[in-house]
Image 1 (spheres, helix red, strand yellow):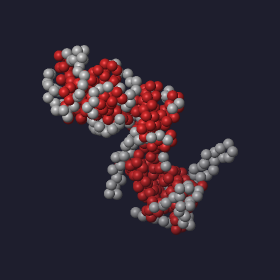
Image 2 (cartoon, one colour):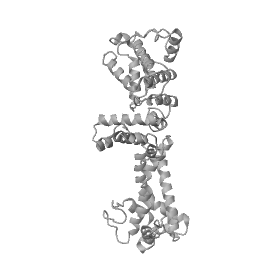
Image 3 (cartoon, one colour):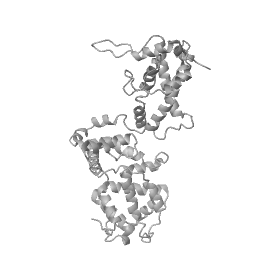
Image 4 (cartoon, one colour):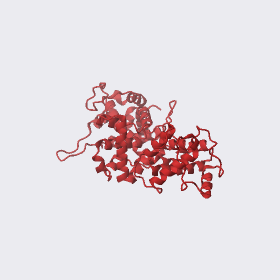
Amino acid sequence: MSLRLSAILDADDDRAARATCRLLEPALRRRVRAIVRRALPGACACQDGRVCHICQAIIDDIILAAHSKLRDAARGQLPYTRATQERPGEEVREWRLLVDGLTEPAETASLDADVAGSMLATYKPSRSGPSRQAGQATPPGQAWLRAAWWQLIHYRIKNLEIDLRRSAAVERGLPARPMRSLDSSPAALPLAGDPPADSALREFVIGLWANVSHPYDLPATEQRHGLSPDAARAALDRGLGLLCAHDPALYRTLVTGPLAARAPGSADRGETAQVAAEAAKITADFAIETDPDTDHARSALLAEIASETAPDIPNAPLPTPQQTPTPTQAQAQASRRGTRPGAARGRRQPDQRVALRLLRSLLNAADGRAVDPVGHCRRLRGVDEPAAQEEIRHLATLVAAAGVMWVDDLVQRLENGQPPA
C-alpha cells in the first residue's frame, strides 16, 4: 500500500506510524548494524538483507521514539531549546523546517514514503553540523530532508554505541562508567602521583571494559608520555599494583573479573570458567593475600617441579624431608591428578615437563592471553575435568603466593636448562 510522506503527520495514528517506519527504517538499518557490530562483536546476525532480532529491536525503539515526537509536532507541540537566565527557550528551528517541509510544497507532501526513505538512506550530511551544510547542498524545497536526518537519525544514534557498550559492561558485572569508579576510588590519589601509571591503568581498564582484542596494547599511553611498549607495560604494572593495594574490591571488579571472562569456553563451561578466573587473578606480582606464605609456596613449587622432571633439569633441587609427601598426601595428590599412588613419574620423556608447561599456561592466562589452563592439564595429565580443575586450582594458589614475577623467572630458567636462582 502506497503512503505519502505527508501521512507522517496524519491524524490516523496507524497511517502515521507506517509512514514514519518507511521513512526511517532504510536509513537506520545499515547504520545500526554497523554500530552493533562495533559495540557488541559477534552479537549481530544480519545477513542476506535480513535484519537480526538485536538490530531490529534497536531500530524499532528508535522509530517508536521518533514517531512519538512527530505526533507531538503534528499537534503543534514542537521541541524547545533549553531556557537560560538570559533568555527563554526557543522553538528548535530544525523541527519547524521538518514539519513545514512535510506538508508543503505540494510535490514534497505527495512524495511516496518509500522514495523518501531511500533519499534519507543515501543522504550524506556535512560534518560541520545541521546549521552549516557544506558537504551536500540540500535541493530547493527539501529542507525537510536535512532536518529529518539530523533530528530523526543522527541525534537518535549519536550515543547508541556507548550506550550499548555500557549495557554490555553492566551485564558482565562491570560499572557502566569505570572512569568514575576510578576517580572516586581510594587509589585515585596515589595514582595521580604517577601519571604514566594512571594513564596506562585507565587505558587498560577501558580496553577490558570495551572487550577489545588486545587490552595490553597501550598506544595512547605510549604517545602521551613518550614511552616504549615495555615502559608502558611497566607503568601498567605500577598502576595495577596501586589499585590492588588501595582498592582490592575495585581491582577485582575492573581487572580480575573481565580477565576471567576472557578465558576460552567461559560462556559454556561454568566450572572451568571459575578455575580460569582464579588463574587470571594472578595479573602481576602484587601483595595478594593467600593462605601459604611466600617461602612455603616457592618451596612447594620447586618440590613439585623437581619431582616431575628431576632427571631432566640440571642441578634441580630435590624435595627436603619436610616437603616429601606423606602416604596420605601422596594419595590425595594421586586422586587430584587421576593417577595411582606411587605411579612412577620418572618414566616421562624429557620433553614431557608437565609441571613447567602447566605453570607456563597459568602465566599466559595471567598475562591476558587466550589460553585454557584446565584444558592443557586435561591433555597433559590425561585426567578428567574435575581432576584438572583441582590441579589448576592448587597451582594457581601457589603461584599467587610465590609471586608471578618469581615464578616466571623460575620457569624461564628451567625451560632454558638453567638451575633455579
